Every structure is written in structure tokens, then in C-alpha cells.
Length: 313
Length: 326
Ligand SMILES: Nc1ncnc2c1ncn2[C@@H]1O[C@H](COP(=O)(O)OP(=O)(O)O)[C@@H](O)[C@H]1O
Ligand SMILES: [Mg+2]
Image (cartoon, rainbow over all chains, first blue to last red; front, side, top):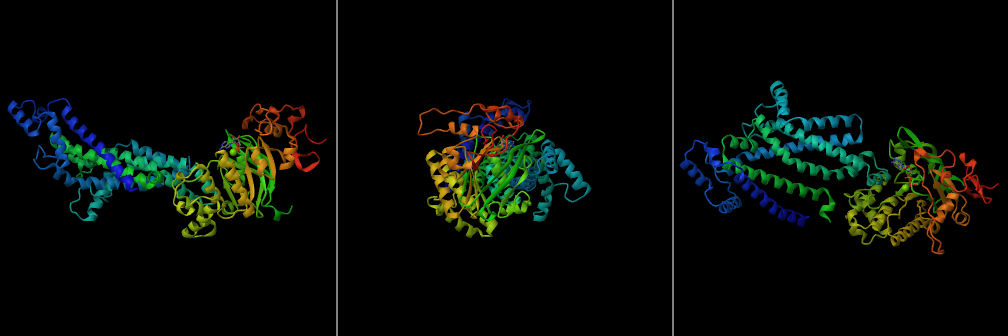
């Protein structure tokens, strides 16, 4: 297992390098002069040259690349063009909110989606199955901002169970959790949909496998067969889909954070876009790319935990 | 024979499968009994209903798709057909054990071997996890898995096909059942491994007094390990005989055809594959189901012949109008 972990971490290095290079190129190759985008086309040539210098765009591209990589390796994302604050500080201030939202959504997805999928598979074409299919169809087809508004109207405005503005005012745990419920439900609903689907189809397959017949030949109870023998075989596809949709989740987090008025990377991205904060945007892209690479590593490491074929080849 | 001498008695078993909107018979009026230490071989081409017979006995028919229409399956004085599901569950894995054709897929890939082997003991004997593990080690030693103690925590993918089938045997025998059903246990294995696995089953059968229902389409295997043979065709028993009588006087035309299709060391004559194929379930002829492929077919075959003694031997019966004693 240790060797597997080390191997996986080493494998992440080229991925990360490729991703960072892509971000670097993306920002520079995109047509249009960034100085015009930032300053507007009325700006004087002198002002634009000054900005160019400040952004480091005056140097040859290879030197820019070396600077960019060197900065990132030392954990420096540069300074915001709009506020001149170190980007790392801005990110560090909101990152915990995004992380807690993502994790809470994952938990919502697993805690609702897994039992729903298992239940559905056991009554194939029965009521449970029909319900789960409808539910997950709704989950994938509902845009995140629509469900967010519905949740807000019902639970925050009408019932007043949770705050409308999901930015906790203090650091008290209860307050943080209360502020987390609606956004994570909203974001988690999408996860529920995916997890239910993949659990259902995985369980249907597993329950038809030869090893399930072997389990039945031992005289085990249905519950034992389902949870002890079939279900662990479904964890691999479940982990895969969770890993894959982490990216989608991060995308939807932007919408969710805006509707719920919650601090987070998503909201910061919008701020950067609005203010044409070119350096902040580049920094946030690096952070997001990094997050996805980390999510992939975690997914792969989880395989090692749920599938013995990975840890004991 | 009194019931005390018999480990498994099947009477008039009828099993059906749901195809389209109808139930079709895949096993018709099958009866046999097996004593402790006895091996009954069930032979026939693919699709003859051998596995369906075995799964009916185990109570492992795929739900909704297959069902038992009629008959009695008696083990320990309990009729499994009439019993409720809880009783059947209690018998399964305790009085009856089963090994399957596919050792590569019959074990759960995510559970350690030792646990899988010992699990039935926790279920039926109330053993703790540790006791079951200890017993699993003994069982793996019994089926001669090398270094059994170290392999308790290994997973199926770390075993070869032959070793997995040994593990399956250990798993099936965990609770010392009276009846072992082996559905083509060696078909998926290399020839040399086949012989080892069969020898192992025979050895354990002697030690544990098992009654074995061995399903195979290999008549060479039948000749070397079976006491009785039942030939099935299209869900019907077409011939049933002690193994000696069967090979001395195969009587049903289908049995003859099976024997002619069997590779032999003592003759250089080529194989004669059986012409034609088993009709599909929905297109079964009305009378004798083999009639569509039979060279001896007569008008009488439009009606299903009864199983009748042949060669004056009450133990040797066949289902054929042409070949029956007149
Ligand atoms: N799950 C199933 N669904 C539909 N038909 C089946 C199923 N299993 C077996 N059958 C049919 O039942 C018949 C008997 O099959 P089986 O008992 O598996 O044959 P054997 O073991 O002798 O090769 C065949 O015609 C086969 O096509
Ligand atoms: Mg079969």
C-alpha cells in the first residue's frame, strides 16, 4: 500500500506540471491584449507599457514561464492587480469555506445516494426503483441555481430554519453548520443523483454475479448478501463517479456560492472576472487545477482502500 | 431403500423458466436419490437442464425468472419444495453445499479467502470470526491449499483457477454437508488440474461420507468417478443406470450418440459429433424431445415415452419407444 501511495504521488508530478503549463499558456495565448482588456482601449500606450512591465509580460515568453513556475514552486501566486494583496492570502481566507462545502456535499451525496441506489436495485422496476430514478433524473437536470433558489424560498424565507445569507457571522461551530446546510444540500443533490444511479446499476450487476450466487449457497440472509457481498463491489464505481464529478461539483460550487452569498473560491473567481483581475484569475486557475489533481489522487488512493486488486496485485 | 440410507431424494421435479409471457418446462419429472458416499453423474449437452436441476435442489433458481412447478426435494426428512424460505436458508450451506463451474468468478473479489471459507460456519454454527478463521485454515489444509495459514488474508485474484476451485470446495464443505452438488467443477480447468480436483472430491467424499451430485458433460469423468448415471435431454431424463450397465449397454439413442461423440484412447475411429442441436425452449417437440435429431424416429415418438426398464434390469431405465423391452 505504501508503495502504491508513493507511486501515485510521483505520477501526480507530471500531471501537475502539464496542468500548470496549460494555465500559463491559456492566459497568454488567448487572443486579445490583456492590457487593453484591463485598461480599456482608450488607455495610453505609456500606461499599457507600464502595466505590461508590471505583469511581467514584457519579458520573453520563456523567461515568463520560468518566473511563473518558480513562483508557484515557492508557494507564491503573485499579487492581485485590483487590491495588490498577495493572492495566497485571499485564497487562504476563503478556501476553508469551499472545502467544507465540497466535503459536506460529498457526504450528502453518499449518505442519501448510496442507500437510495441499493434500495432501488433490490426492487427492480418496483416503487423504490421508480422513485430513485425519478429523483436522480431531477437531480441531474435541475440547474444548481434553480434548486438553490427553491431551497432558499422554502427553508430560509418561509420556514426560517436556516439563514438566507450563508456566510457565518462568527466562528461558532453551530453557526458554521447552520450556514452550511442549505448550500451543501443544494450542491449535494447533484451528487445524490450521480451516486444513486451508479449505485443502482452497480448493485444490479453485483447481485447477478456468480459470487452472489455463492453467497446465497451459504444460506446467508438477503441483508448480508446485499451489504457484505454485493455492496463492497459497488464501491469502486461509486468512488470513480464521485472522483469524476468532483470537477463538476467545483463548477457548481461557483453558482451555489453566489446564490447563497457564501464566501469561497467560486465567488472569488467571479470577483476576479468582474474586476478583470488578471493575476488573481491566473492564481485561482492554478488553485482549482491543483484541487482537481489532489481530488484525483485521493480518488485513486481510495481505490486502494476499497479494491484489494489495487493494493495487493 | 429407506429414507435413512438416502442423503438426497428428488421426486418428480419440474422446473420452469419464464420466456416471453409463458412458463416453459426446463426440467420435467426428474427423480433420483443419492446415498452417502455415492456419486450420481448428471450428463447431457449444454442446455439440457442439468444446472437448472442442481439450482432447484439448492434453492438458487434465479428469482422471477425460474420456479419449481412440482416435485419433492427431500434432505434430512425435510421437503425443501414445501418448506418456507427460512428453512431453506438454514439448510443451504449447512446440509447442502455447492461448487460451480467458474472458479474465476464464483469467489467474491473483495473479501479475503479465509473469511469466505469460514463464513458459513459463522452463519450456521454460530462461530466467532476468530473461530471461523481457525476452521477456515483447517479447511484450506484439507483441500491442500499450500501454506494455508498465510493465505487466509489473500484475495481470490492471487490464486490460480485450480486453487480457487479448491477454495470453493473448502467453502462448500465448511459445515460438513450431507450433499455436495458439483456443477461442472472441472470444465474450466486445465486437464492435469481437472484430475487433481476430481481426486480431491473423491477423497473428501470418502472421508466425510458425502453424497455427490456431479454434473458434467465429460463421459470419461463419469466412467472414472460415478456410481450411477442420469442422461438428460431437453429437461427429460432419457436414461438412468448404474455406471457399469450404462457403459456396457447404452440404450437410448441420445446416450449412444453422446458416447460416440466422446474421444477415446482405445480406438482410432474419429469422433461423431451429434448432428443437429437441442431445440430451443419455445420450440420443443411435443413427444420425445430428441425425436428431431434421432435416426430411429418412428410415428410413436410423437408421444412422450415413459422411463421403462431395459435389458431386463430394473435399475437400468430408458425413455424410448424403439429401444424398450418388448
Ligand atoms: N437465466 C435464464 N434465463 C432464461 N433461460 C435460461 C436461464 N438459465 C438457463 N436457461 C435455459 O434453461 C435451459 C436449461 O439450462 P441449464 O440447466 O443451464 O443447462 P445445462 O446446465 O444442462 O447446460 C436452457 O434451454 C437454457 O437456455
Ligand atoms: Mg450448466
